[in-house]
Each structure stands twice: as structure tokens, then as C-alpha cells.
Amino acid sequence: MIETLIYTVLTADADIKARVNTRIYPVRIPQNPVYPAITYYRASAGVVNTLAGYSGKKNPTIIINAFARTYAEVKDMAKELLTAMDGARTFRAVLTWEDDDYNDDLNLYAISQEYSCWGTE
Image 1 (cartoon, rainbow, N blue to C red):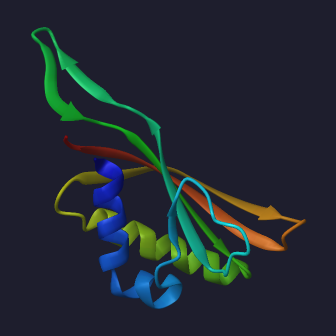
Image 2 (image 1 turned 30 degrees about the vertical axis):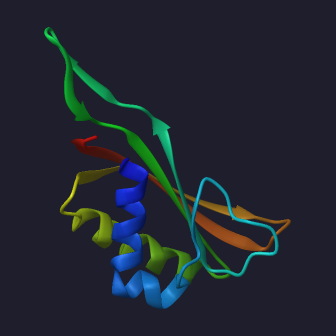
Image 3 (image 1 turned 120 degrees about the horizontal axis):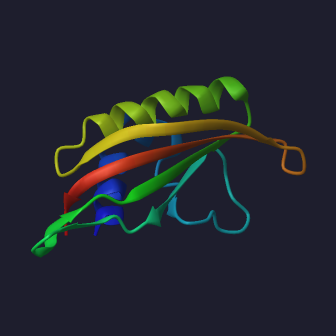
């Protein structure tokens, strides 16, 4: 499952680990969170078919969200995420979209990154 591979890549990156430790969560952040933190989820299945049927390859879209108390920190996290995803060896990931955000209620900055991932499952 690509989500397991992504978790492994993110937790193995020294810069990300130093910043968030184990605060890397599938889909959503748990209650009473500590920031900075990261979430990830699959936005599309990306099954790759040929005329002969399923090819055994997948090209899912994965969204990774970084959350921090300052804009500078969340921007640094975005760079670290891109470096980690670009360096993945068990799958290929291409950044296709990035968006900055701010949540007034939580006083929290966020960056969402969308990756086109290629691999087998």
C-alpha cells in the first residue's frame, strides 16, 4: 500500500523527524494535537490499465498536509516534504500542486501538497 511506503519515507527523513518526531498521521490529526504535524491521504486510486487489463502498476494521487504555528516553519516543512518524496526509492513521486492556507480558529498555517505517485501494489 502506497500510504505505508509514504509513512516510511517521511519518518526516515532526518529533517522531518527532527521537526515532527512521530506526528505524521493518516487522514487527520488526533484530538489535542501538538504542532507542527503532518497528515497524508490517498485522493485517488490511480489504477493503471492497458488494453490487456490491469497492468499491476498504480498512479495514485496523494495529498500531504503540513501544519505549523508560523508561516516560515510551514514553508520549511514543505521543502523538507518535497526533498523526502523526491528521494523515495520504493516509488516515484512528482509534486503536481501546492497551496498555502491559514486557519483563523486554530491560529495555524498549513501547506497542502499533491503528488502523483507511481509504483506497484
